[in-house]
Length: 339
Image (tube, rainbow, N blue to C red; front, side):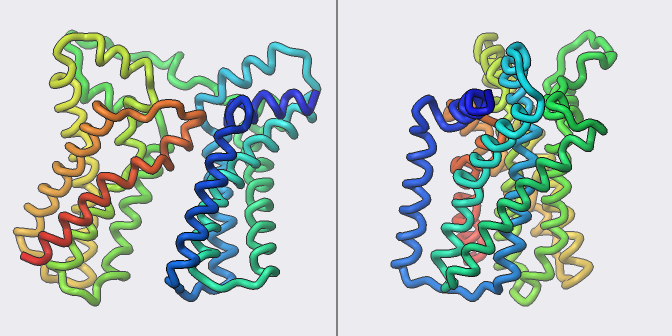
């Protein structure tokens, strides 16, 4: 029973014949070897390595356990006879394997490739990742105050909530409701504001005209709000089916992302003014320009190149496509700083 439960979840995550896992491991090996032979080296303290490994793994494991798309998979397993402990172990083992081999391994491949480590430090970093995964799995059920298999079932939210009926439809209203209904999106946005507060500390020694455009580009990396169509296939089908939605939906969606990006940019400018000073009005205009341009790029990617074939929501948050718009913004920031 435990083996069958593990295979049900593992095949959903890795593919029927585990082909997705094979491709991911091969890509991680290529990344490791490419960085290793490049000769690029940086010094990283072992304590930082252990902290990164543990924090990264715990966060991703919690995110995997919280993914709403696991609901159907759990419902199917609950329909079959099961023993609570074996189902929990197999389910957590499958998600933990997914987190370790497809997410944490990618981070460790980069870190191991650019610095020289002893085998003991490599082993300890792996153990830290495993311990963090186990800790997240043990703490996750406590949010419901129970320890049975049903504690890992992601309850649908918002179904009993009374919604006020409006005469006119509003994309803005839908987007704000969606954001309020997904608290992890709000947490990610708050984290970006935290990054905006810290950037002046890290980059304050450089001139504002060089650093501020780079900061605006970095703060465009707010993944959750840029994947609303990819993470909700039903919404995407509805939007594409109705006439005139390319403008009716995409324009408000672009402005919505712009507002979110601009909020982080304003926090960045305020933090810079407090810690460094010298913020001129042209930098506010530049922030608005970067916020609108990055939002436009994100919406165009969602409309013309939506992410498909993902297994859990974590795949969307860490898809390589998330770096396309920030990378373009960084190139643009370099050009802007030159002039």
